[in-house]
Length: 638
Image (tube, rainbow, N blue to C red; front, side, top):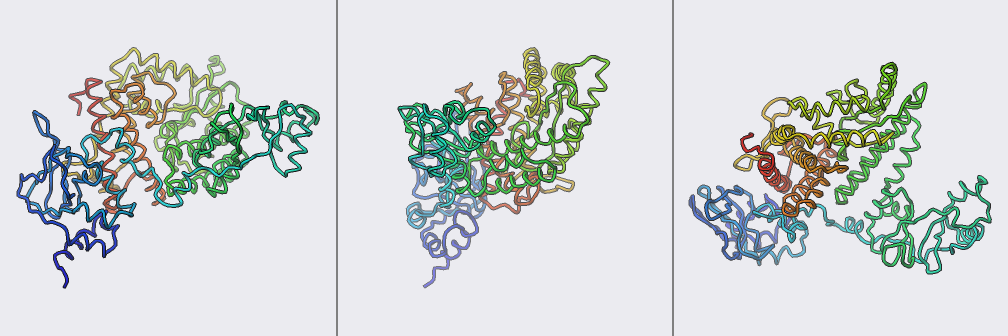
């Protein structure tokens, strides 16, 4: 005989995660054991400090408030409405409740028995991934050392293919070697005998000291620079980069990119001072991942036309999509795509210089600004850049500036054809306002700092996130020193920056609804850039400037550095870093899905799980903004 009540419960549950991840037969098994609870407004389901129940809960009708109680007051943490789960602590932490759950209105609650739920979902990874996220979302103070690894489970592999990328790289064991006292001729003969393209040079203790490749022989022996009888140590590349045998494929790829190498020596303890046990090559990585940033970087460096440069950069989008599908950690993804974007800029400048009638008249430096300056430009968004040139005599100034403006026009045009749109506000080096001598730039930043107003803060918020790309780095260093010396002597500027950082409060209304655009073409869309990412970006910039932190541009790296410097605020800063990475990953996925910048999101297209993850990332925004109010005396700023 059918149980019509259980069927109705199951029909409701299957609309919402994680129950929509459970097969019908198992869901019915759960539904037959569900307790149905009726609550009047104000009734408590559980209180802070209560021992955990044998159930967790989902709202059928009505709404349930979650409170954090203190000795003097109670603070509402969230409101759960139809389809929201809460009270998941028995499943995850098995400890007393940290919140109080009270009916906000007349409500019907389904109580899901923990044991029966566990019995039918014990092998369902997706279900537990969702529940851990929900647990974190309903935790008052979730950013503890024990829970950090659970909250952002998006970064962990959850399929066979994903796990493969995080397993130990398959390196070549017992690599062919030669001693460091042999001749190049002997080493080359050994390479021919074994039909290999490189040989590892080791000392008598079998520690790796160098590597010889076919390219070394071609460039140093065939050209006549050295005799074939020369010692192998004269032409080997040294020192070698070494790693432990348990390095993952993803990490090995990142190391190769960072050091611009194609071979990693595997040693017993991961250092050059231990025995060589294997070699991992770029080819091994390429075979595993099926696509290689190293290959893309080579194509970019060799590109002779804008068309070939665009073709190479487009491959990075395919790579980006693949990385996100494989759940490669976003920090790795950011590093790789930023390296590719920088290489595109460098090549565009090289091509631009070739189009000029003469070489640059004086030293100059090209800077990327905004998201690329922070190394956070994963998608094709607009370009923001600036140019600094060395000071010249007044009589040569116009001619020098005209040269660099023409060069900048070539470069920005190339970048536009590659796929980076022109900046709508014309914040590009091709604009005379953003192409200046080093002394002019110093004066400009001093003016922004000592005479702040809304326009100055708007511009400085973009220009303070700059990154050296090309040319004479000392010019950028000089500018950086000027900025940090200037901000030592002002508090007004920080207050203006602080006010700007508070302009977008956490993007949730009182009843947990997303704050969407109210009019225009984007009506009812959620602006993840301005409402979620920018508050964290602005806060990180302000704090690093005030703490005199140089050379750290990435938002999440800024928060991580702040966590180092202020251990007492480590949990807050770590939570901001994690939230930013999760939001950046979410925006990038949306942009790839809809072939746009990912800036505006149609909330109706998101699953309940995706909305939950977004809400989870908004909590640190409120915490960091409250911190800014206290630090910079902004308590009355709205």
